[in-house]
Amino acid sequence: MNNSFVKKVMNVSTTESYEQGDLLFQQGDPANQFYILLKGRIKLTLGEAGQSVYIVSHGGEAFGWSSLIDRETYTASAECMTPVKLLIFDQEKVLKILEEDPANGLVFFKRLADILGNRLLHSYEMISTVA
Image 1 (cartoon, rainbow, N blue to C red):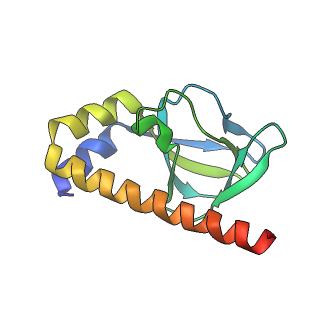
Image 2 (cartoon, rainbow, N blue to C red):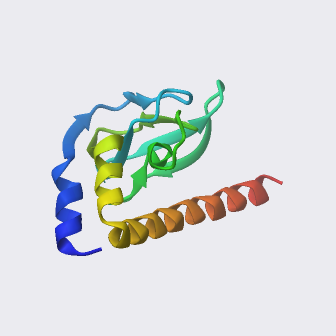
């Protein structure tokens, strides 16, 4: 992605901080924001029992991707495990930028696919160790 494109995307972000225990979104909530972790740890869980499926713990790691792939609601819940600092992106603003620059948008979605693929592999590893 070129610098101009990255700058446009970054310009529509806000930086926010949250405390340990804060819930960013729940499974089934409207998916209207995309997040990048700057600092801290986020637990992603599924179902009413809160089965942990992934820990977002590396700076620069993205989550809340449901908002970017035409899902109306989040597929998981996100809870702060520690105090966190996040970049938050509005779905409509980001999608508009992606549509206006298809070449960089393609690279963006390839990187998103890589993130999702890595999470899927992580899930396979978790399932195989439990079995």
